[in-house]
Image (cartoon, rainbow over all chains, first blue to last red; front, side):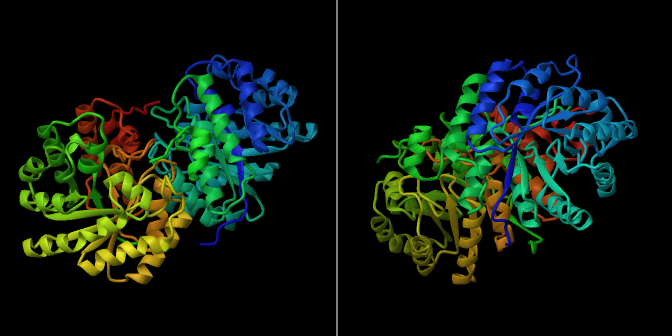
Length: 312
Length: 312
């Protein structure tokens, strides 16, 4: 086991979580949660997405959110599906663009109503715009570990998109298990091959827990050399175009596990649990995160943060 | 990664799950679920426990359950906390005894109202009885990865109990993370040291998901050389004496992940998902398992077994 000493967590609840939440989360509540998360030490965030507000009304306040959120050392990325979204995100002042294309044709069509080729055709104009405005671009590859319509996705289809993003000038890549189809051996293989093929490129893993394997996948990725992971406050998240989608890895579960393994994340565990409690209160529903319920492993901390009493 | 080609799953829902379920599950419903599970290929089961019916009324039908369940190649173990429980289990016809003692003093007192020394004092008489009746004994070590009252549990305290069980004649040992305090590095270390110290002894890992790490722990244990795991239909389970306890690893989540990694379990994945749907119907509440909701990764199977439609 050769594990990294340091890992970076990208917080995706404001985008992936609020986007898939059944109700529109009011802008001021979004800002309140984002402020709380930044105070916990989060330095990378997927903060909103510039998508068609008729298709995804939950994100209709994207420009306002980007304008209002504090920086305080945190970089706010905006997900964009196309050139129009990129223009709006840059206009609003996003610190980074996350450009998403699916590795499988059927999912790209379901997700952004275009073929992969049509999505790729936009790349040049988006990169020109990003360079002009000096905004870094991350390429996100959806269905990297499997497609809910097509099943297995060939590694070559994933790497073709990665190559297109990197050739265009992307500063990093996200390998997304959009519908929770990854297992540790698939993760081990894709991560090792990605590092062999693109040794200089920063990449993040984005896992969903539809089949209960997300945390095992993260551990497998860690062992294979990954050092950046997408996590979500309270474990909220999903994909509106995928039935039965389940949440992302909960930020406090991951921060807890890595801290216990001696891996630095820069996240204050108690503060992030409290931010999850705030989110739960705002959303008014029990969230999937486990550490936010059980607390850290130290009995006195579990008692203080989660009200768990273990006196005999 | 040197992973085993074959893994054995011990089904613990009838004991760990029904024991911690708030309501008494009627005996005929228990038998119905157990029958369904055996049909899926399960060959080892923790079927009930012989405990004080005043303290845990959910298990008051232990003798009836053991008498009524079909064998069909499946071995039915009964958990026992003391000599009296062992006598009743043997009397009823249990195929195996699971004798549980906690590695931490406070948890043993909370769980069985005795000190570890008082529990150990019963061992000889239990092993004599078991030998007389030709019933194999498994030694289960609760709080092997941490205690909710005391925090970290020294490895030596775990191995002292393991040694006592093995010296007495136990045929195997269970290392239980009773309240979900394990993380992959702790699991890696304990499993490797256990194998070094007791190279000939069969052992099982029993993980709870209180802090979201159970599946990562399983994967870490696999890499360290473990080949037997406790899982629970639908992921039900917990410990009645531990606040905020969370479920066991869901049987179909584990069967799915291992099958996808090319590791044989002998479990029919579709059949076990259907058994989890049956259990959910009987218990009348959404269960924690994920594969029972999202289905296998093959789109046509997910559609057939979980009714998920992915047509575009």
